[in-house]
Image (cartoon, rainbow, N blue to C red; front, side):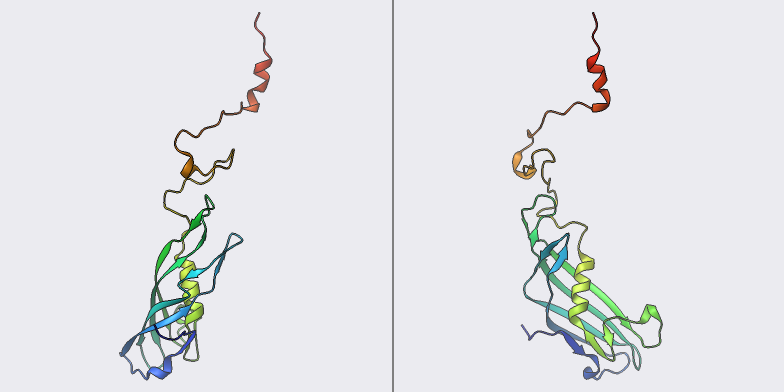
Length: 172
């Protein structure tokens, strides 16, 4: 694996219009903060493939691909979770091309790989990180892990308070 790459000088590739290069970089991704919890990313240095294509004199088409594992508590049952995500992100940088063609990760020919990888991973995450796809979560009454409790786990339902007055009726 190569050395850690936080930024990359696109101009150093000396590409002409229409040329491209594929590079393998090692990127460190900071832990993600989700729901007040910290979710570290594994491995510490993620192997990423960066495709750089020169569009014209000053523009670039960029593609970043990698796989990373996010570790931390499951958002339903609080057991350890380690889902792996495949990220495939694209950016375009064309100075003077407007908002649609301006990448926030390219500044003066310098690509901020570190920030782009972190943001791309955050966008690839589902709404909830789970230990497994069919996680049943915790019982809302007793807090038991429903993944371990079995199908026979149940509680007697409390009577509906809207019908409480009916229990006072006496038929004689």
